[in-house]
Length: 180
Image (cartoon, rainbow, N blue to C red; front, side, top):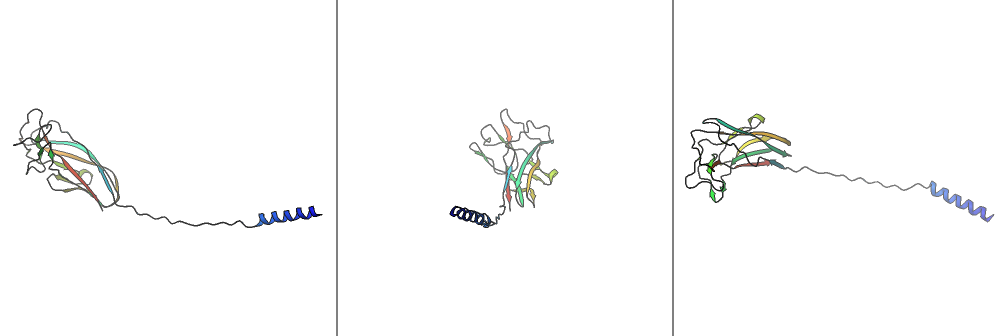
């Protein structure tokens, strides 16, 4: 009889454990964030016109700029007025290509093209900029953007002097991207 009572007690204990509600606990986490303003551009490392095609002729090289931005943005361009080798680009030559050897700007009297370089983005919503030593807006946008914009480097030649072998006309263009 004791065995029967023990078995019945164990059975009742098992039923009470199974019938006992299981405890459950849940909690939520709210996750928030905000996209920061950023911009990244990729521009051509170099552009080579080769031999200019004609006097007063447009010489053009079509290139692409990649733009990735999260806010209102602008891209500006200017002549870097750089130092090439140990020689600074001459004062007053802003926007214009200047004679250089493979290692330096020619000094003391480099040849300078008559016309400034033009960067044209007008076919894709930008503007056409005649380059100078000051920043000028080339593109701008009010919305986040990720894509490619086409530009053309255009150099109109006049009766500019031919250069000796090994020399070429040179300019460094600075692209500055900003986003707000």
